[in-house]
View 1 (cartoon, rainbow, N blue to C red):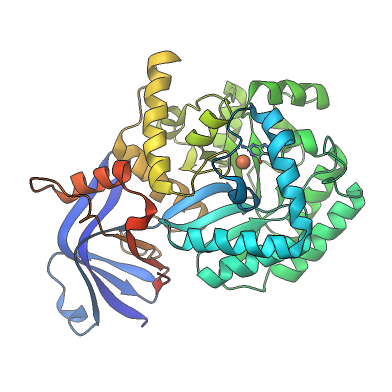
View 2 (cartoon, helix red, strand yellow; view 1 turned 120 degrees about the horizontal axis):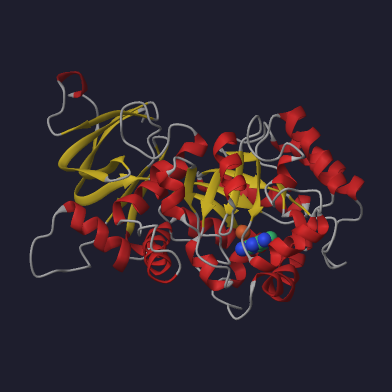
Length: 423
Ligand code: GUN
Ligand code: FE
C-alpha cells in the first residue's frame, strides 16, 4: 500500500513549545511521505484506503540517537558503579561475549524484537569490535524494518586484552572491509564509524578513521564529556587538545563535512559548545544513563535554546530501558533536578520540549523525520491507552503526557516507518 490514510487522534510538534493536537483526523501517507494532517479529508484523497485507529493516539516515530545493542543483555543490572569502573567491570566483559556468534544471535534477536515493539523508528546504534556479530546485528535490524545506523566499534588502547583489537592496522582494515560489505547491502540499515571514545582510541586510529569517513562518506558517532574522570583521562592522553571535543575535531571527526553524533556532553565547556554549534554536531542527551553511571546532568535546555542540534537517547544499557517514552520523562525530571540543585539559570525542560527532542530534534539526523508536516518521512506510532483508565475525559494532549509517564512500550499498538507498517 503506497498511498493511504491513517485515522486517529493525531499529535505532533510544531515547534519546541507547541504540540499540535488534531482529534479525529486524517494523516495522509503518499509513498512513505506525509501529505499533511486534515480534520476534513481533501477531495483528491477521498479514494485512498483508510487504516482507522479509532480512539487511539497517533504521534511521530521517535529517534534514539544513541544506544548499545550488545549491552541490552545486561540492562537493569550493574547500576552501582561510576562510568569508567562500570565499563571495565560489567560492559567490556559482556561485549567480549559477542565473539561467539551463537551468543550474539540470541542476544541481538531479542534486542531487535524489543526495538520493534518500542516507540523508536530510527536509531543510531553501537555494536562491538567484532565484524561478524556487527553484520548479524545489521541483519536483525533490517528484519524488523527500523531505519538505523549501526557501528562496528573501534578500540585499540586502554582496553583489556580479551576485547582489544589486534592492532591499529587490523582495526582499520576490518572497518574498511565491513564498510565495503555493508554500505549498499541493506535498504534500512547503514554503517556509521564508531570510535568508542578518546580513552580507547589512539591518534593513529583516529587518523585512519578520518580517511575512511572521507573515502566512503559515512557519518561518525562517539561519546563526549560524559564524566569528570573521563575528561581528566583525555587531558592526560591528549595534552595537545584544547578540550575533549578538540581530540575528535583534530581528526575531522567532529561534525562539519562528516555528520556526527556525540553522546552526553554533560560537562562541555564554552569552546566545546561553540564548536559543536558551528559544526552541527548532534548531541545525544541520555538522562537516565547519566544518572545510572553517576555522570551528572547535561544542560539539555540550554543546548535547545541556543540552537544546537540535540535529540534524546536511551543509551542502553547505561540506560536501563529501550523506551523513548521513558527517555522523555527522564529528560524532564533530570532537568528539574539540575535547575534546583546545579544551576538555577537554566530552567527545566517542559514536556512539550522533551517530546520535541525525541521526535523532531533527533529526527533531523536522519533527514526530514519526526513531524507529520507535509514532506516529512511518515514515521508514526499508534498508542492504545484505554488500559490507563481515568474517571473523566482527557484531551489527546493530556493522554499523551500521561502515556509518557505511566505507559510502557506494551501500549504501542502499531508502528509505521517511512510509510511501511512494521508492527
Ligand atoms: N563511554 C565509552 N563507552 C561507553 C559506553 O558503553 N556507555 C557509556 N554510557 N559511556 C561510554
Ligand atoms: Fe553510550
